[in-house]
Length: 421
Image (cartoon, rainbow, N blue to C red; front, side, top):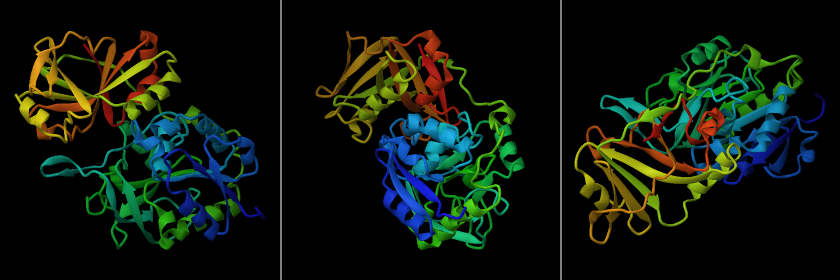
Protein backbone atom coordinates (compact mmCIF):
# COMPACT_ATOMS: atom_id res chain seq x y z
CA UNK A 1 0.00 0.00 0.00
CA UNK A 2 1.67 3.22 -1.22
CA UNK A 3 -0.79 5.76 0.13
CA UNK A 4 -1.19 6.49 3.80
CA UNK A 5 -3.75 4.09 5.34
CA UNK A 6 -7.03 5.79 6.22
CA UNK A 7 -8.46 4.78 9.60
CA UNK A 8 -12.00 5.78 10.57
CA UNK A 9 -12.41 6.43 14.30
CA UNK A 10 -15.99 5.49 15.10
CA UNK A 11 -17.97 7.34 17.74
CA UNK A 12 -21.06 6.01 19.49
CA UNK A 13 -22.96 8.15 22.05
CA UNK A 14 -20.89 8.03 25.24
CA UNK A 15 -17.48 7.25 23.74
CA UNK A 16 -14.86 9.67 25.08
CA UNK A 17 -11.47 8.60 23.69
CA UNK A 18 -11.87 9.86 20.13
CA UNK A 19 -9.38 12.75 20.40
CA UNK A 20 -6.44 10.72 21.70
CA UNK A 21 -7.27 7.90 19.27
CA UNK A 22 -7.22 10.30 16.29
CA UNK A 23 -3.93 11.74 17.53
CA UNK A 24 -2.27 8.33 18.02
CA UNK A 25 -3.26 7.21 14.52
CA UNK A 26 -1.87 10.42 12.97
CA UNK A 27 1.35 10.20 15.02
CA UNK A 28 2.02 6.79 13.46
CA UNK A 29 1.80 8.17 9.94
CA UNK A 30 -1.77 7.23 9.06
CA UNK A 31 -4.73 9.39 8.14
CA UNK A 32 -7.44 9.53 10.81
CA UNK A 33 -11.07 10.25 9.98
CA UNK A 34 -13.77 10.91 12.58
CA UNK A 35 -17.09 9.13 11.94
CA UNK A 36 -20.26 9.27 14.05
CA UNK A 37 -22.28 6.08 14.29
CA UNK A 38 -25.26 7.59 12.43
CA UNK A 39 -23.34 9.41 9.72
CA UNK A 40 -23.54 8.68 5.97
CA UNK A 41 -21.63 5.45 5.34
CA UNK A 42 -20.63 6.60 1.88
CA UNK A 43 -17.93 8.54 3.76
CA UNK A 44 -16.32 5.18 4.56
CA UNK A 45 -15.96 3.93 1.00
CA UNK A 46 -12.21 4.63 0.81
CA UNK A 47 -11.13 3.75 4.37
CA UNK A 48 -8.66 0.94 5.03
CA UNK A 49 -9.56 0.22 8.62
CA UNK A 50 -11.63 1.14 11.64
CA UNK A 51 -10.83 2.07 15.23
CA UNK A 52 -13.53 1.69 17.90
CA UNK A 53 -12.39 3.82 20.86
CA UNK A 54 -12.90 3.67 24.58
CA UNK A 55 -15.45 5.38 26.77
CA UNK A 56 -18.92 4.42 27.92
CA UNK A 57 -21.12 3.93 24.87
CA UNK A 58 -24.76 4.36 25.88
CA UNK A 59 -23.52 4.79 29.48
CA UNK A 60 -22.80 1.02 29.66
CA UNK A 61 -26.55 0.45 29.99
CA UNK A 62 -27.40 -3.23 30.21
CA UNK A 63 -23.69 -4.02 30.18
CA UNK A 64 -20.64 -2.50 28.56
CA UNK A 65 -20.79 -2.55 24.77
CA UNK A 66 -24.10 -4.42 24.56
CA UNK A 67 -26.21 -1.69 22.95
CA UNK A 68 -23.62 -0.38 20.49
CA UNK A 69 -22.82 -3.94 19.40
CA UNK A 70 -26.39 -4.31 18.16
CA UNK A 71 -26.35 -1.15 16.07
CA UNK A 72 -26.66 -1.66 12.32
CA UNK A 73 -23.19 -0.13 11.92
CA UNK A 74 -21.74 -3.30 13.44
CA UNK A 75 -23.34 -5.45 10.75
CA UNK A 76 -21.56 -3.19 8.26
CA UNK A 77 -18.29 -3.83 10.13
CA UNK A 78 -18.89 -7.57 9.88
CA UNK A 79 -18.97 -7.12 6.10
CA UNK A 80 -15.85 -4.94 6.18
CA UNK A 81 -14.06 -7.55 8.30
CA UNK A 82 -14.85 -10.25 5.74
CA UNK A 83 -13.36 -7.95 3.10
CA UNK A 84 -10.13 -7.98 5.11
CA UNK A 85 -10.23 -4.47 6.53
CA UNK A 86 -8.62 -3.91 9.91
CA UNK A 87 -10.96 -3.33 12.86
CA UNK A 88 -9.34 -2.39 16.17
CA UNK A 89 -11.25 -1.93 19.43
CA UNK A 90 -9.73 -0.56 22.63
CA UNK A 91 -11.46 -0.77 26.03
CA UNK A 92 -15.13 -0.02 25.31
CA UNK A 93 -14.30 -0.71 21.67
CA UNK A 94 -13.08 -4.16 22.69
CA UNK A 95 -16.30 -4.73 24.63
CA UNK A 96 -18.33 -3.77 21.56
CA UNK A 97 -16.35 -6.16 19.34
CA UNK A 98 -16.84 -9.07 21.76
CA UNK A 99 -20.57 -8.35 22.16
CA UNK A 100 -20.96 -8.10 18.36
CA UNK A 101 -19.30 -11.48 17.81
CA UNK A 102 -16.44 -10.08 15.70
CA UNK A 103 -14.18 -11.27 18.53
CA UNK A 104 -13.11 -14.00 18.89
CA UNK A 105 -14.46 -16.06 15.96
CA UNK A 106 -16.18 -13.54 13.67
CA UNK A 107 -19.74 -14.50 14.66
CA UNK A 108 -21.78 -15.37 17.75
CA UNK A 109 -21.52 -14.37 21.39
CA UNK A 110 -18.58 -16.57 22.41
CA UNK A 111 -17.00 -14.63 25.30
CA UNK A 112 -17.69 -11.83 27.75
CA UNK A 113 -15.76 -8.87 29.08
CA UNK A 114 -17.26 -9.22 32.53
CA UNK A 115 -17.12 -7.21 35.73
CA UNK A 116 -13.67 -7.05 37.31
CA UNK A 117 -13.44 -9.90 39.83
CA UNK A 118 -10.34 -11.44 41.40
CA UNK A 119 -9.94 -14.65 43.36
CA UNK A 120 -8.67 -14.29 46.94
CA UNK A 121 -8.42 -16.49 50.02
CA UNK A 122 -11.87 -15.19 50.93
CA UNK A 123 -13.31 -16.20 47.55
CA UNK A 124 -14.36 -14.09 44.59
CA UNK A 125 -13.98 -10.37 45.23
CA UNK A 126 -15.31 -7.54 43.05
CA UNK A 127 -12.69 -4.83 42.63
CA UNK A 128 -14.90 -2.28 40.85
CA UNK A 129 -13.65 0.28 38.37
CA UNK A 130 -9.89 0.09 37.83
CA UNK A 131 -7.87 3.16 36.91
CA UNK A 132 -4.21 2.17 37.02
CA UNK A 133 -1.17 1.25 34.92
CA UNK A 134 -0.38 -2.26 33.76
CA UNK A 135 2.26 -4.01 31.68
CA UNK A 136 1.37 -6.02 28.60
CA UNK A 137 3.35 -8.04 26.08
CA UNK A 138 2.68 -9.60 22.71
CA UNK A 139 2.01 -13.31 23.27
CA UNK A 140 1.23 -14.24 19.67
CA UNK A 141 3.72 -14.62 16.84
CA UNK A 142 5.01 -11.35 15.32
CA UNK A 143 2.54 -10.10 12.74
CA UNK A 144 -0.13 -12.63 13.77
CA UNK A 145 -2.61 -9.77 13.95
CA UNK A 146 -2.86 -6.18 12.80
CA UNK A 147 -1.24 -4.63 15.89
CA UNK A 148 1.35 -7.30 16.77
CA UNK A 149 4.60 -6.29 15.07
CA UNK A 150 6.24 -4.71 18.13
CA UNK A 151 8.80 -6.32 20.44
CA UNK A 152 9.15 -6.03 24.19
CA UNK A 153 6.60 -4.86 26.74
CA UNK A 154 4.40 -1.78 27.04
CA UNK A 155 3.34 0.13 30.15
CA UNK A 156 -0.25 1.26 29.56
CA UNK A 157 -3.16 2.73 31.53
CA UNK A 158 -6.35 0.77 32.04
CA UNK A 159 -9.69 2.34 32.95
CA UNK A 160 -12.65 -0.01 33.07
CA UNK A 161 -15.15 -1.74 35.32
CA UNK A 162 -15.81 -4.66 32.96
CA UNK A 163 -12.54 -5.90 31.49
CA UNK A 164 -12.33 -9.53 32.58
CA UNK A 165 -12.10 -11.80 29.53
CA UNK A 166 -14.06 -14.95 30.36
CA UNK A 167 -16.06 -17.70 28.69
CA UNK A 168 -18.05 -20.78 29.67
CA UNK A 169 -17.02 -22.44 26.42
CA UNK A 170 -13.95 -24.50 27.37
CA UNK A 171 -13.42 -25.50 23.75
CA UNK A 172 -13.08 -21.81 22.97
CA UNK A 173 -9.90 -21.41 25.02
CA UNK A 174 -8.34 -24.42 23.27
CA UNK A 175 -9.35 -22.90 19.94
CA UNK A 176 -7.79 -19.54 20.80
CA UNK A 177 -4.54 -21.16 21.92
CA UNK A 178 -4.39 -23.42 18.86
CA UNK A 179 -5.00 -20.47 16.52
CA UNK A 180 -2.52 -18.21 18.36
CA UNK A 181 -5.32 -15.69 18.95
CA UNK A 182 -4.37 -14.70 22.51
CA UNK A 183 -2.48 -11.76 21.09
CA UNK A 184 -1.62 -9.76 24.22
CA UNK A 185 -1.30 -10.71 27.89
CA UNK A 186 -0.75 -8.92 31.17
CA UNK A 187 2.77 -9.30 32.54
CA UNK A 188 5.11 -7.85 35.15
CA UNK A 189 7.87 -5.33 34.45
CA UNK A 190 10.19 -8.19 33.46
CA UNK A 191 7.71 -9.58 30.94
CA UNK A 192 6.49 -12.56 33.00
CA UNK A 193 2.82 -13.33 32.25
CA UNK A 194 0.79 -13.98 35.41
CA UNK A 195 -2.81 -14.09 36.62
CA UNK A 196 -1.70 -12.69 39.99
CA UNK A 197 -4.02 -9.74 40.78
CA UNK A 198 -0.99 -7.48 41.08
CA UNK A 199 -0.25 -8.21 37.41
CA UNK A 200 -3.79 -8.86 36.13
CA UNK A 201 -5.91 -6.67 38.42
CA UNK A 202 -9.22 -7.33 36.61
CA UNK A 203 -9.05 -11.13 37.00
CA UNK A 204 -8.97 -11.78 33.25
CA UNK A 205 -8.88 -15.47 32.28
CA UNK A 206 -5.31 -16.63 31.56
CA UNK A 207 -4.16 -12.99 31.98
CA UNK A 208 -5.67 -12.13 28.59
CA UNK A 209 -5.35 -8.45 27.70
CA UNK A 210 -6.22 -8.70 24.01
CA UNK A 211 -7.51 -11.17 21.42
CA UNK A 212 -7.62 -11.24 17.63
CA UNK A 213 -9.99 -13.00 15.25
CA UNK A 214 -8.81 -16.02 13.17
CA UNK A 215 -7.71 -13.83 10.24
CA UNK A 216 -5.91 -11.35 12.49
CA UNK A 217 -7.56 -8.26 11.04
CA UNK A 218 -9.87 -7.71 14.05
CA UNK A 219 -8.26 -6.99 17.44
CA UNK A 220 -9.77 -6.26 20.87
CA UNK A 221 -7.52 -4.83 23.60
CA UNK A 222 -8.59 -3.59 27.04
CA UNK A 223 -5.73 -1.21 28.08
CA UNK A 224 -5.25 2.17 26.38
CA UNK A 225 -2.13 2.51 24.16
CA UNK A 226 -3.60 5.69 22.68
CA UNK A 227 -3.30 7.50 26.02
CA UNK A 228 0.49 7.35 26.33
CA UNK A 229 3.51 7.89 24.06
CA UNK A 230 4.64 4.45 25.23
CA UNK A 231 1.77 2.92 23.26
CA UNK A 232 3.04 4.19 19.90
CA UNK A 233 4.44 0.76 18.85
CA UNK A 234 0.86 -0.55 18.90
CA UNK A 235 -0.20 1.97 16.25
CA UNK A 236 3.07 1.63 14.34
CA UNK A 237 2.22 -2.06 14.08
CA UNK A 238 -1.15 -1.21 12.58
CA UNK A 239 0.53 0.88 9.88
CA UNK A 240 2.98 -1.94 9.17
CA UNK A 241 0.06 -4.36 8.74
CA UNK A 242 -1.06 -2.53 5.62
CA UNK A 243 2.35 -2.82 3.96
CA UNK A 244 2.83 -6.50 4.80
CA UNK A 245 2.09 -8.96 1.95
CA UNK A 246 -1.37 -10.54 2.12
CA UNK A 247 -2.37 -8.15 4.92
CA UNK A 248 -5.03 -5.47 4.64
CA UNK A 249 -6.56 -7.10 1.55
CA UNK A 250 -9.65 -9.21 0.98
CA UNK A 251 -9.51 -12.77 2.26
CA UNK A 252 -10.96 -14.83 -0.59
CA UNK A 253 -13.22 -17.68 0.33
CA UNK A 254 -12.84 -17.16 4.07
CA UNK A 255 -15.86 -18.21 6.09
CA UNK A 256 -14.74 -18.75 9.67
CA UNK A 257 -18.34 -19.47 10.68
CA UNK A 258 -18.12 -22.84 8.94
CA UNK A 259 -15.05 -24.02 10.85
CA UNK A 260 -15.70 -22.71 14.34
CA UNK A 261 -16.57 -25.19 17.13
CA UNK A 262 -20.20 -25.48 18.17
CA UNK A 263 -21.00 -22.73 20.71
CA UNK A 264 -21.43 -23.48 24.37
CA UNK A 265 -22.90 -21.14 26.98
CA UNK A 266 -26.09 -20.32 25.02
CA UNK A 267 -29.16 -20.11 27.14
CA UNK A 268 -31.41 -22.92 27.93
CA UNK A 269 -33.66 -20.61 29.92
CA UNK A 270 -33.99 -22.07 33.41
CA UNK A 271 -36.95 -21.91 35.78
CA UNK A 272 -36.51 -20.26 39.15
CA UNK A 273 -38.46 -21.13 42.25
CA UNK A 274 -39.50 -18.30 44.53
CA UNK A 275 -37.28 -17.68 47.54
CA UNK A 276 -38.65 -17.09 51.03
CA UNK A 277 -37.98 -13.34 50.94
CA UNK A 278 -37.38 -11.45 47.70
CA UNK A 279 -36.97 -7.69 47.31
CA UNK A 280 -37.57 -5.81 44.06
CA UNK A 281 -36.46 -2.17 43.86
CA UNK A 282 -37.70 0.16 41.12
CA UNK A 283 -36.97 3.80 40.34
CA UNK A 284 -39.64 6.46 40.80
CA UNK A 285 -37.95 8.66 38.21
CA UNK A 286 -37.38 7.51 34.62
CA UNK A 287 -34.91 4.62 34.47
CA UNK A 288 -32.76 5.42 31.45
CA UNK A 289 -31.09 2.02 31.51
CA UNK A 290 -34.49 0.32 31.45
CA UNK A 291 -35.58 2.39 28.45
CA UNK A 292 -32.37 1.71 26.51
CA UNK A 293 -32.47 -2.04 27.14
CA UNK A 294 -36.12 -2.02 26.04
CA UNK A 295 -35.21 -0.28 22.78
CA UNK A 296 -32.47 -2.84 22.12
CA UNK A 297 -34.92 -5.68 22.79
CA UNK A 298 -37.54 -4.17 20.50
CA UNK A 299 -35.30 -4.88 17.54
CA UNK A 300 -36.13 -8.55 18.17
CA UNK A 301 -39.60 -8.24 19.75
CA UNK A 302 -41.08 -4.93 18.45
CA UNK A 303 -44.07 -4.80 20.85
CA UNK A 304 -42.14 -5.59 24.02
CA UNK A 305 -42.61 -3.42 27.13
CA UNK A 306 -40.04 -3.67 29.91
CA UNK A 307 -39.77 -2.95 33.63
CA UNK A 308 -36.35 -3.34 35.28
CA UNK A 309 -35.88 -4.12 38.98
CA UNK A 310 -32.90 -4.41 41.30
CA UNK A 311 -33.25 -7.84 42.94
CA UNK A 312 -32.18 -9.15 46.36
CA UNK A 313 -33.20 -12.45 47.96
CA UNK A 314 -32.62 -13.07 51.66
CA UNK A 315 -32.40 -16.08 53.92
CA UNK A 316 -32.16 -13.94 57.04
CA UNK A 317 -34.45 -11.16 58.26
CA UNK A 318 -32.37 -8.24 57.04
CA UNK A 319 -35.16 -5.96 55.82
CA UNK A 320 -34.34 -3.22 58.33
CA UNK A 321 -30.71 -3.20 57.22
CA UNK A 322 -31.63 -2.98 53.53
CA UNK A 323 -34.21 -0.24 53.88
CA UNK A 324 -32.08 1.85 56.24
CA UNK A 325 -29.01 1.69 53.95
CA UNK A 326 -29.30 4.49 51.41
CA UNK A 327 -26.61 2.87 49.26
CA UNK A 328 -29.03 -0.03 48.73
CA UNK A 329 -32.40 1.74 48.80
CA UNK A 330 -33.01 5.48 48.38
CA UNK A 331 -36.64 6.26 49.30
CA UNK A 332 -36.37 9.67 47.63
CA UNK A 333 -36.11 8.13 44.17
CA UNK A 334 -36.94 4.44 44.58
CA UNK A 335 -39.84 2.22 45.62
CA UNK A 336 -39.63 -1.37 46.78
CA UNK A 337 -41.82 -4.46 46.75
CA UNK A 338 -41.33 -7.58 48.83
CA UNK A 339 -42.44 -11.08 47.95
CA UNK A 340 -42.71 -13.11 51.14
CA UNK A 341 -44.60 -16.33 51.84
CA UNK A 342 -46.66 -15.99 48.67
CA UNK A 343 -47.71 -12.39 49.38
CA UNK A 344 -46.69 -9.19 47.59
CA UNK A 345 -45.93 -6.35 50.00
CA UNK A 346 -44.94 -2.76 49.35
CA UNK A 347 -42.44 -0.99 51.55
CA UNK A 348 -43.84 2.15 53.17
CA UNK A 349 -40.76 4.35 53.53
CA UNK A 350 -42.53 6.89 55.75
CA UNK A 351 -43.95 4.32 58.16
CA UNK A 352 -40.86 2.11 57.75
CA UNK A 353 -42.89 -1.06 57.38
CA UNK A 354 -44.14 -3.48 54.72
CA UNK A 355 -47.81 -3.28 53.74
CA UNK A 356 -49.99 -5.56 51.63
CA UNK A 357 -50.12 -4.32 48.04
CA UNK A 358 -53.20 -4.63 45.85
CA UNK A 359 -51.29 -3.81 42.66
CA UNK A 360 -49.78 -6.69 40.69
CA UNK A 361 -46.48 -5.07 39.79
CA UNK A 362 -45.15 -8.36 38.45
CA UNK A 363 -47.84 -9.20 35.93
CA UNK A 364 -46.16 -10.47 32.77
CA UNK A 365 -43.04 -12.55 32.20
CA UNK A 366 -40.13 -11.96 34.56
CA UNK A 367 -36.52 -12.98 33.90
CA UNK A 368 -33.75 -12.81 36.50
CA UNK A 369 -30.14 -12.17 35.56
CA UNK A 370 -27.50 -13.07 38.11
CA UNK A 371 -23.81 -12.47 37.49
CA UNK A 372 -21.36 -15.30 38.06
CA UNK A 373 -19.83 -14.95 40.57
CA UNK A 374 -22.51 -13.08 42.53
CA UNK A 375 -20.17 -10.71 44.36
CA UNK A 376 -22.96 -8.39 45.51
CA UNK A 377 -24.70 -10.94 47.75
CA UNK A 378 -22.19 -11.21 50.58
CA UNK A 379 -23.18 -7.98 52.30
CA UNK A 380 -26.77 -9.21 52.78
CA UNK A 381 -25.95 -12.36 54.72
CA UNK A 382 -25.29 -16.02 54.04
CA UNK A 383 -27.43 -17.50 51.28
CA UNK A 384 -28.46 -14.13 49.85
CA UNK A 385 -28.55 -13.51 46.10
CA UNK A 386 -28.54 -10.38 43.96
CA UNK A 387 -29.36 -9.64 40.35
CA UNK A 388 -31.47 -7.70 37.89
CA UNK A 389 -35.09 -8.66 37.16
CA UNK A 390 -36.76 -7.81 33.85
CA UNK A 391 -40.58 -7.92 33.80
CA UNK A 392 -41.95 -7.94 30.25
CA UNK A 393 -45.27 -7.51 28.50
CA UNK A 394 -46.21 -8.17 24.88
CA UNK A 395 -43.57 -10.85 24.45
CA UNK A 396 -44.35 -14.32 23.10
CA UNK A 397 -43.00 -17.74 23.98
CA UNK A 398 -41.43 -17.90 20.53
CA UNK A 399 -39.62 -14.63 21.30
CA UNK A 400 -38.24 -16.15 24.50
CA UNK A 401 -36.79 -19.01 22.45
CA UNK A 402 -34.59 -16.58 20.52
CA UNK A 403 -31.02 -16.43 21.77
CA UNK A 404 -30.55 -12.96 20.26
CA UNK A 405 -33.30 -11.62 22.56
CA UNK A 406 -32.07 -13.36 25.71
CA UNK A 407 -28.50 -12.22 25.04
CA UNK A 408 -29.67 -8.62 25.33
CA UNK A 409 -30.62 -9.26 28.95
CA UNK A 410 -27.51 -11.25 29.87
CA UNK A 411 -24.27 -12.57 28.42
CA UNK A 412 -24.34 -16.36 29.01
CA UNK A 413 -20.58 -16.46 29.56
CA UNK A 414 -20.78 -14.35 32.72
CA UNK A 415 -24.40 -14.58 33.91
CA UNK A 416 -27.34 -16.90 34.41
CA UNK A 417 -30.83 -16.10 33.17
CA UNK A 418 -33.91 -17.71 34.72
CA UNK A 419 -37.64 -17.36 34.31
CA UNK A 420 -39.30 -16.43 37.58
CA UNK A 421 -42.57 -17.98 38.78
